[in-house]
Image 1 (cartoon, rainbow, N blue to C red):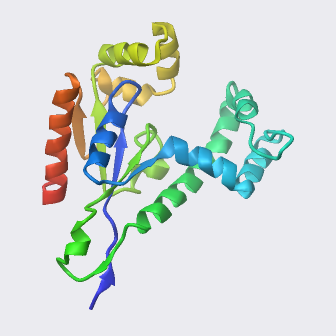
Image 2 (image 1 turned 90 degrees about the vertical axis):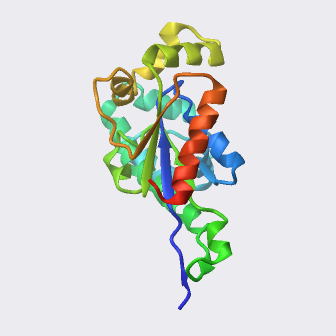
Image 3 (image 1 turned 60 degrees about the vertical axis):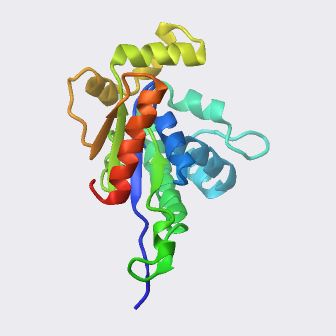
Length: 221
């Protein structure tokens, strides 16, 4: 009997300057669909008015513009120095993003039997997100988790060069990724199925991504 096959899901995570987006781009080149959490979340803000209404109710203040759309600057000003407001927003937004991802991933499940060719066209799908390891909601939502990591100083240097910003600016952004920073400095062990150490150049990273991909499709991981 033929049944719809559940698509294998992979979470790709990593801190600022780790190279996780580059790994995702390499996987995308191989035909692997990649769900970009940042852009998809912004799309939800623009399309899901009930979600935005619930967010406004959670913080008890206006976070929309005159057009009724979410004003991201207003939202940022509300949650910047209020950890409780941030937690309330995350408790609404994160489940919505996860539901959106799972619905998106289901679109890649195929009809087939056993080892049909159609089933092998897309071996897995990816969610790219920096918060996977830090948020319990996402912990058991994926079949596999890949962490892309690099020494902290390497990450800082890459982010400075990429964005043309100061070291202080990068460190301020990294301050929101304590667990990922601790992992980079060896103070924490990552709860991930696979780790790619991106401590070399782009060619080296591509080779390591290729090896990871081959392991995934051969069922080693």
